[in-house]
Length: 449
Image (cartoon, rainbow, N blue to C red; front, side, top):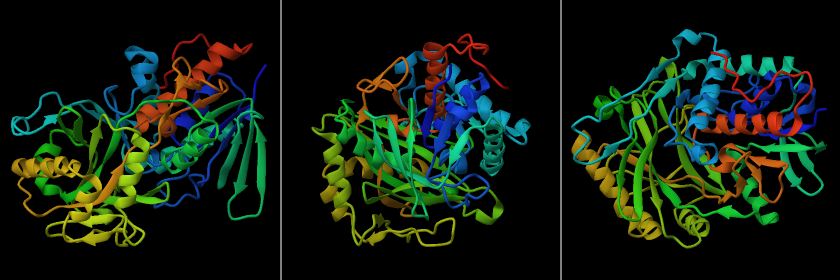
């Protein structure tokens, strides 16, 4: 007996879930994937936030390999199982890679002396898939799922989900059509572009959530040569500082052809970053987020939204630099921002917390000696929405056990953890609920390396 599974979102979480299911004999015809982006054959390079494999699987290509970052995967399933799930995600990228022999791992082991007086440096393994191969990986992966009879609805936006009637309502974009799709099991796998909708559902159904810290900061940008001595040791470096109620970290480092990306969360402009491959895109820049995790804020979601709204002007975010002007996007347009010549608006919005970020930048200058040759795009915000409370054994909502939240919808950070979420849910569907007849599946992990 098989059940109809609907997956909202074709990012790495949803695609890995579908792959795990069909690899183990689940009928593809009973799986439907809905995404408001395009399939990998029609998706344009600059369409970063939506479509097959989501943002990370379209423009990044670095798979972190450690449970200390990217969300709290091990709290759901334990350390050993979490690493096993990550192995499966990496195996899938290898499996559909046109040149898997070019995948390599960087694994820095010793923190360099020049960092120690000012920062900690998180050292962890990273698998480098190669962002120049991601589009081909997406095409190969998509064809595999199509050949397995998985149903895809592209350029289709989910506008409402009735958890009680188990019904999904969708608008087909660029048309006047709408769809209603029933499900028996729902994997809610939206990326960052769907976080607004996730919050809408959380409010509508009064979903209980887990307490979270505020995570807010800036996207920092400077010429790459200042950071080269650290990049040579740790390409995707992560600097951090920790205080009583505030900790700071750099993350999501982009090098060589590093561009700032504009996002919109809850109707407000925020910033992120991505990297392009190919000499035609090289700009010799490095960018990364500087994020504060702030504990002890009452109503952290409302507090964060209030700060973000104060950091808007003329319909966009802010850009501050002692000497630079805002950069251009990978499409050759100016990054949308309002330049400010002083930090008073930022200080007013963030209060004393801005001092932590400014001190972080000052300490970086002592290490890397970039002087005034830097700029920040304000704000960068991570995981504004509360994390819904789920059953740890299968990531189902405590109020609606046939609905599973994964990826960004469950505060995952990055490709590997998001994909692991999807596989974890798929395993529970295969193993705990259906026990499909005539299908080989004994709960062991299936790897394709």
